[in-house]
Amino acid sequence: MTVGEKIFKTEGSEGNFETSKAACSQAGGLLASPRNSAENSAIQQIAARHKKMPFLGINDIQTEGTFKHLNGEALGYSNWASNEPNNSEGIEDCVEVHSSGKWNDKSCAEKRLIICEY
Image (cartoon, rainbow, N blue to C red; front, side, top):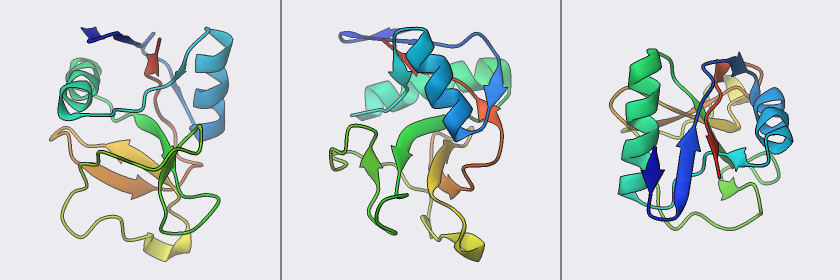
C-alpha cells in the first residue's frame, strides 16, 4: 500500500520487536512508523486484512515514557488509545496498532504482524 512517498508491505509473518526490525532491515526497509493519520490508516488497513495487530517502529526503550521513532526522532504524530501508554506491569516499551487504528504500548517480547515501510 502506497501513501505519499512511502510503501507499506507485509508478507503476513509475525515476530517480536527485534525480529520484526531485523526482517524489515534485511528486506531493505524499516519497521512501519506512521508520521501522519494517512500512514496510520494504511497500516491499520493492512493489519485488518491479515486480522493481526502489528508493532510500529516506535518505542520508549531508551527513556521510559518518551516514545521515539527508531532513528531517535521524537514523535510528531501519535494515535494513542485512551489511557495509553500505561506501561502495564512495567514492561511495555513497544507500540502495537489495534484494529481501530489506535495505539497501545505492549511488551516487545510479544509476537505481532510484521509491516515494513520502504
